[in-house]
Length: 276
Image 1: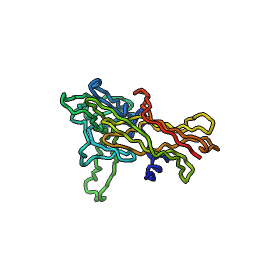
Image 2: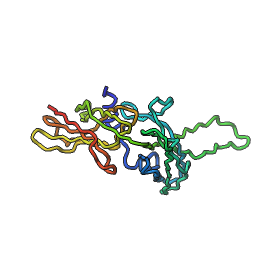
Image 3: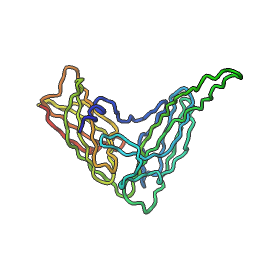
């Protein structure tokens, strides 16, 4: 069950978002917005790090998380999926960013008094709008040269916007921990986070190792690990950094899932296992 996770997460093909997330020449901060009765407004900062002006169109999309933590577009909503776009307004809906210029996107919560308790989530998509390219027109009388096709990639990045109504909470546990090694010799820890409650969890995973009789030392970390509602669980993988010549053996590995520093760093789940 962990084959795809092993090659995607431990080999580094899927990395967690950084504190600022970028696509092309666009940087976005923060990469997650949470609104409730105590916080009804938020701002997202966009920065064009490129050397040319760029246009970005902003809209809401619906996404769900699969068993390995990858986000996929929702075509048919499930019965337990709750979306936030009807509860949130944002402005502007399109921005033109000059080089090295920042722009704020303002987000406002409109929370109905009778909204059922729980968590509602949509993703704010920032999609690049390619500059219009005028087709070269042949000179009068010049022979036609056929059809010229130009493929222009369109970049986009999304961030979750979460609305919490009423009493919300979640509890997380950790299972199925294993130490694995790829054919290339890269070591990693894989496992599963299980969630209960009516709220998602979000935090960072850290791995530490202690040889028998020794103290724990950090050997790996992944930031921005979420288990979104309505998912009951997700698989995870942490690629380990081990000094050359050393091997994780004859000791104990500890995996800790804790809140991000800005939210208090409370430990959400923790487990250990021995390695021979």
